[in-house]
Length: 264
Ligand SMILES: Cc1ncc(COP(=O)(O)O)c(C=O)c1O
Image 1 (cartoon, rainbow, N blue to C red):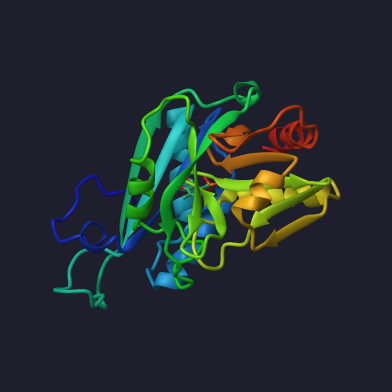
Image 2: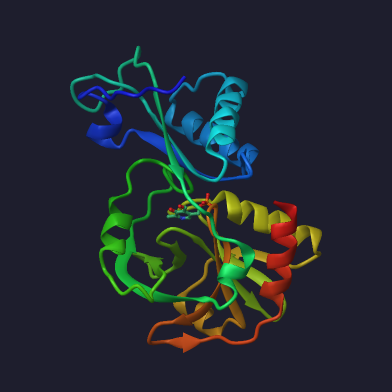
């Protein structure tokens, strides 16, 4: 199922023609595996990349997770090799690569103190055809992450070219305002995170009002609480946006954090 070599004409390498999933593994299980497979299948359908049988892929990932115990699995799917130029060859064979990283993953208590963000100067370009997808074209994020080296800054906030709030460099963002959750809609750019989807489902179970909308930096600065989500860190409260604002003593984020972790 997974390849251990890569052709020099692989289209993932030449054009970023493919998708990836970064998955957390705890106690030999892939966290939120159905959500990862769903996003991958949806992205592959949008790019017309044929995937192998999903239940066989699921079984192979579970087997790898059991062998790993705890850490990160990164699955890369490219359209395969070939074609001179951009035109996708009709007979391309998709290439699946699985990278295994044994490591200790963050626990709920690790995020308690909250993290510090900075505002990136890079602006994300709008491209609705690719919006939400976890595709292999990640140069904007490479440049955004190159903007800082200070270890005390955990994440960078990303706006788009119209100054709308989108996400952070490796996370999605949520704001709490008057007991309501607000998160940017991702129909123009950004990655629709599996943990974002899990938080939205969790908020619904808790009966919280949720708005997916067009948000701006001012909304972040006016928020009562701010937090980030991703597969590996689950949920991290934000303690400061460097040079702009600090947050202390929110109550909804700890409650949501507890509910979310107990559902994982
Ligand atoms: C740009 C970006 N946005 C959001 C996320 C969060 O996605 P997920 O919850 O699927 O990990 C990631 C994860 O790496 C990301 O790279």
